[in-house]
Length: 330
Image 1 (tube, rainbow, N blue to C red):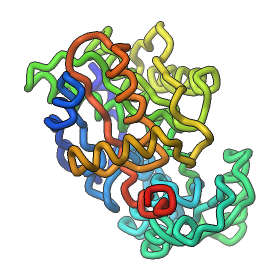
Image 2: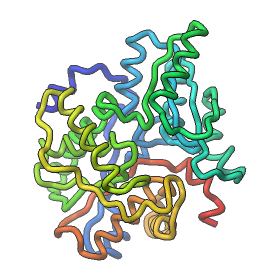
Image 3: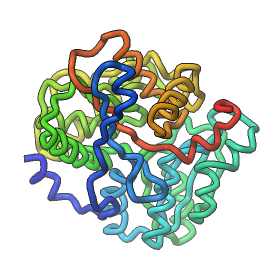
Image 4: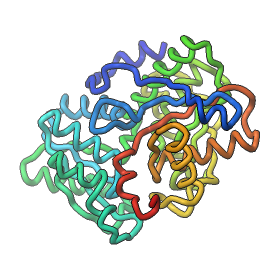
């Protein structure tokens, strides 16, 4: 039913094949239970990451509408902006990005390296803003400015997180469910970073239909559970309505003990998780999303907060941003 519903929506084929579902043998041995990693850090565009799946639908719509410019926003080290700029370059579109400095740092590595350097390579036009405190209106104002110049912009929401963008993670849920079936795996949970909410909303809706009762646990990266829950729930409901399927009645599952002190700033648990996965598996996590999500996974497993069984970690990417955090990781 989900596959049939998804087929109604045009999609660019930016990720032509499934990303791997790999067991992490040394981490599994250390934690005493099987840990698997869904490798969406290996998607095919601009050094990988989860935003490609959302952009397949969002940019297909933009092209159908005759857009010549993609307009989006995020932090200076935004993975989403990096991949949006790359898709724009690939499709012959311009990209205008509103960027904020959420840490207020003057660190040259953060201001000019990592994802920010890649934006230069992809030819994005950067407009610095003091704060993205009203992103919908700020993006629309920028789009209107471009219309006055005779351009045809299309706004891509922060994180690609709209109902249309979240279709990408319904499709990813179908892909992951097929991989679990092939391995005859019954996971205790899927754990992922929960930020702009589209990834969790899409995967949660998919698993509600494909693997009912199996929790998709979002580790918040910027908000308390009370703040994040309505964002995920609303987007999940909008997504269900877009697809014409039932939405879950239960609220999304979130854990908020790992995101402090704020978005984009790692804490000791984040840094420990990054070093742990590097030491044990040669796997690169980032300080903004996957490092915090892995800190949550490690804590939930070691405190026996999950039922028995394998655990699946959704690696949403972010490796380029890691190189902008040398002062924290040195």
